[in-house]
Length: 327
Image 1: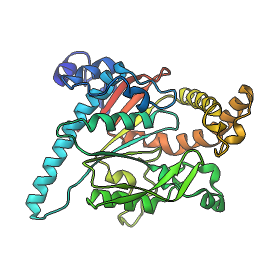
Image 2: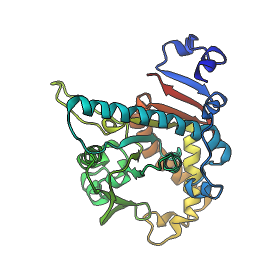
Image 3: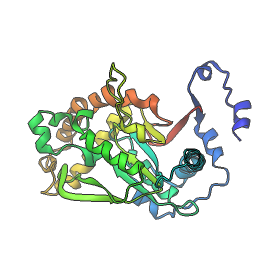
């Protein structure tokens, strides 16, 4: 199928492909790669998997996520075979090595939907692998720490995460350790939940979702090893959209939350529940420009070229093109 695409619609010798480390597929080209991958999601699951304002329907899963599921099955199988061959070569007996998939992208781009859909599809592979999902929100510093450090307005920026704890978690997962704990984050209180943990116990596949999971940082001049979160990934997906589109999605989501989650007196954002449409829109724009746009431009978007695969969305939330890094 890929050979037919290369010789037909997509010419890899074209100027826009010749020096591109990615193979770029239109939606139609990508959808053909589903082949005979079965649809395993039930109609009633779409609402549960979809985040606010995301589009997720049968067509989107068939055209985008089933081909991606098929591709991931190839990558996982190849990695496992290489792992067992290396283990035999080194004459060692290691624990099971989980396959880790990173999902990155801006606030409001639909990372959570993508991560949940992938989890649901991958868990239905034969012979039913154990697929867990974790978000990096749980590894944010508590609000009290952010306030003390004067970076509360930079929540979600790389410096707002407890990086050593996150790296230790991923290292333990990759080493196959049992019952690895991760902190729990509450979107209602907008803070880490004290003394509450989620345990990840030797999954076959772990999906790690977060805005800055592909972030690197300054490299040392002396060549010493500096681990990054993405060092533990076997495959990574970046969800992409134009800035103007992301801004509009964020505003719509803020207005919807004003009428739902923000009405709860326990909500950190309860003070916004009584804002008029005009006031809420102005508030959302101010938050977007002060925090989310700055994080996107300075930290998130520069990591896009590090992803294995890029899903580019249009204003209707539908994926328009797929870019896959060449081997």
